[in-house]
Image (cartoon, rainbow, N blue to C red):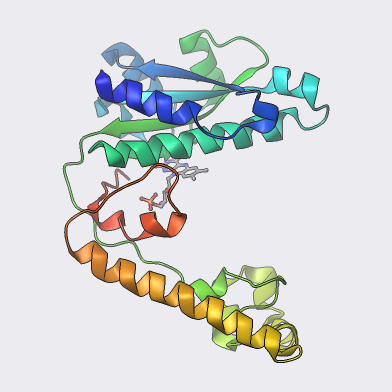
Length: 238
Ligand SMILES: Cc1cc2nc3c(=O)[nH]c(=O)nc-3n(C[C@H](O)[C@H](O)[C@H](O)COP(=O)(O)O)c2cc1C
């Protein structure tokens, strides 16, 4: 119970649009309802075994009244921030979690009596980890970190071919040229980019060696990179 309180507290510290805090959390612990949760999913039939599921619901209507045309999107973004905080806090307190979205919304609304204007947007299955999954395979960071320009990243053609979607893959040569241009501008840009890039590389390699030793401090709100290194300690339920 104490831990559930900590998870919800962490969630409510998340940023939200206009500080509307457009979220509601349904803490699901009853076997009958956990079964209903599992039944609402096409694949995650294991959910009935979860000791705890937190259903995150977005106050879409409320957000829409403040931000016409953006209600759903911004309520969901706020809920996503809260959901991620729950997952980070879960690791902090020795739990593990899985974010699930593939449920049938109408079934969940019915089972939990969720009113119109409020939408269940993700659920978090939580429990004590009973396995140590293999370390998470990361994409090369050059393929997703860009400096000051969408194309200012790796100039390695293989990266463009491998790590972008089909649309980009067909234009790999084009992209490579744009990347070369973006990163060659006046030399100093290139130097700064290299310095930042080196710093990121150092962080990643430090995290790699850290993750082979015992778990270290997990601070709420710490950088994403902190958590990449910790996947080796986290349960994967799917
Ligand atoms: C928006 C979103 C939707 C997801 N939906 C599901 C889902 O429906 N079922 C599931 O088993 N996992 C789901 N996941 C979890 C991802 O599969 C998981 O985060 C990914 O495989 C990476 O694994 P990791 O989080 O353990 O690093 C979802 C994650 C996100 C962020």
